[in-house]
Image (cartoon, rainbow, N blue to C red; front, side, top):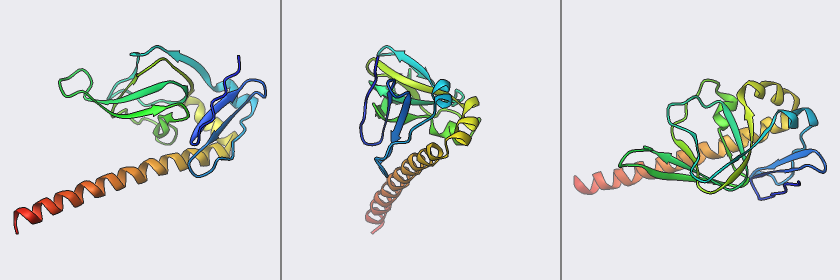
Length: 170
C-alpha cells in the first residue's frame, strides 16, 4: 500500500522509497527521513468519533495526520463543548510534546472523520531529532507559526477590548 498525501505544510509517506517528507509553510522542500526514524513511527487508524486524548492528559505523542480530520475540542462532555480548531491531512498535533516533556493537553482531540496517522512517542523524539536535525528545524518552524498565530489572536482580542473600554468610558 502506498500512502501519498502532499499538501503545503504537510507530511506524506511513500513506502516505495521508504521515506517520509514533511514540508511547512516556510518551505516546500521535503525532509527525507531515514529507515531507522521511519521504524519509530507507528501507523494508526482511528474511526470518526474516536477520542485520541483529553484535557489534562499527558501530551506524550506527536501525531502526523496522513488522511482525515481531527477536531480539537474545548470543554468536552459539557454544555459548553465546542470545536476550537480542526487539523487535517498534513497537519501535526502534539508539537509541544517534542520540546516540552511533561506537557499536558489543553484540549481534547477527537476524530472528525476516519483518520490515518503516524505517531511518534515522546520517548523516541530525542533520538529521532539527533538523527534528523532538519526535522527538528521544521517542527520548530511549525511551533513558531502556532505561537505567532496565538500572539496575533491575543493582540486582536486585547485591542478590541481596549476599544470597547475606551468607548464605554469616553
